[in-house]
Image 1 (cartoon, rainbow, N blue to C red):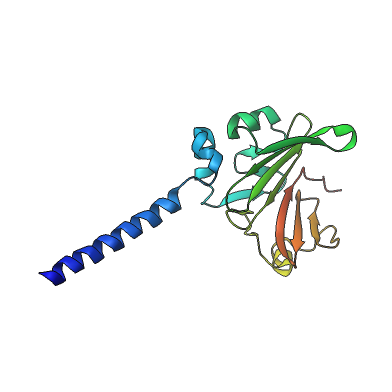
Image 2: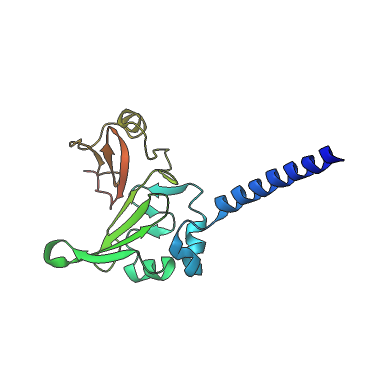
Length: 179
């Protein structure tokens, strides 16, 4: 009887630990999202891969979308400020608890999107954070320009910033027309 009681306690402990682990995995990714149901909805799918589409956008946010629509869709950003020549561009920063952020830059519409992090985002071709630069070149070919720590593909509308020779940031911008 004593062994049965200890077995039951052991099974209960394992099940309760598993439940806590599952609950931790499905918890919202931001502290703010628990206060903001819209953010909870948006960030709830960040544990799935979100596409950073060159020349187009990230997930459902696209280049050319009005910044007010981004705010209406995602809620208030973690921070926002003006930058650039004559403070013309707004920068809206959205963060997750997983050291990942998405930054939307533009005057009245989204003109550039910057994604930085370590999980959750990749291009449709398969480039993701932490990928070595030589693999990016195998996928996208020779870059338009290969500045120090950057691979730029202007005709595709994407720039990869490297840190320690691996993808650290992805920048989406309008494609440059091919001549």
